[in-house]
Image (cartoon, rainbow, N blue to C red; front, top):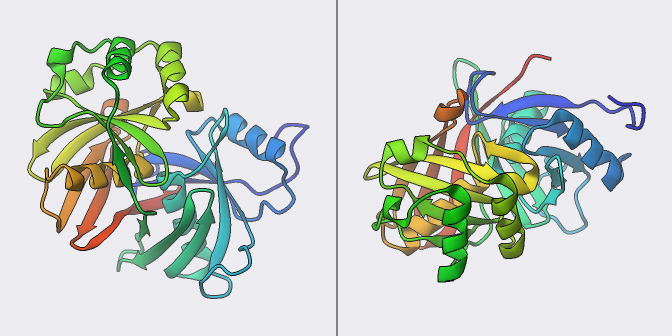
Length: 293
């Protein structure tokens, strides 16, 4: 805590891994009622995680069991973001350790996000969020060319079976398919150039995807607009990708997708994306655990 921050309890959790050194870390403040925007941003910046979550009481009219419904806001080290999947999973696990597994409801800037937490016999907690209704958009050729230039990717390195699109399921992400695992592993990009394009297109991350099998994918997410080179495990992008894969008929409408992320950063995590026929919303689940501090 710095001298300018209020005295609040900041928890450290990782999402999409049951190991503290895997997945994506998030700061979690379960009672942010005394914090203004500047204080929340200062805490997120000090922590340096891709996002941190801040909880207050639920707004009037939010459905949910008393004591299990909350307002949640998300801050990266640079700015507030409308939705963050890994911080949602981390927050749900932190709450479940205190009030027990079960259903939670979060009012986020992107909309209402229900989360269910279940416990395994070994004590591992697993949280699954349900996204807001997603949508998919085309990207203009000149904007795609700029994204590839910022990444240093020749267009020939793209997978033609994974067409570039902008996908939304709470936040906007540009989905780009890598033709090989080697292309995905070699990530060295122009931080400011990509950030400038992302701000223009209102993107939260760029989701880089390599398809390993019919329903198994490896993904990476540059996040320069958040002040972070790469996000280790990105639940919001996983939800957006699930909607993308269904919209483009890359997978059956009833599917369970496995996304591996963080391996190239030394923080491996696994995200489970569930698609249900007739339901446009996407479910993203994973384990989570507290990190020692």
